[in-house]
Image (tube, rainbow, N blue to C red; front, side, top):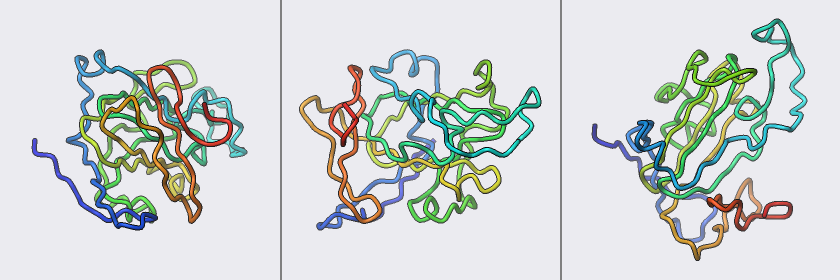
Length: 201
């Protein structure tokens, strides 16, 4: 399958540097690729945060939906930096899914008309409170925009932007502009977080 790549201009940079928005052809979920990943990132971290999203979905056993990992609304953190070849892991409940957005504009507007479903509400592979598990390796540098398509989850912040860079041990996290203010995003390495703002090591 040929990779479909969209070029767009990065916002927040003074030089309008082109950013490559990655398509699903830049993701590899084969067992061989997953086994060879040098590092992994669980989207949503440890999943211990209380997101304050307290309505009852009628979870699998009749209790509230568990809002941890990818199921957290809004997603926290909402941006990541990883290397080409790293493994992305989405753990989530049956009340969420995983969609790859075709562009930054679609991501910002939560427009799923041309989005690609990567994993459904019944994807499986997980366990316990998180019955769904989607894992993939990113095979190219660029930007991934991922969101949940269920209800108004994207509109209330269940979405992440993932910058994928070529591996460079010496590089620090890049300076990016997020919602008008400069911040330094943490970079995930096999040894843990590198760079980033206060509280990220």
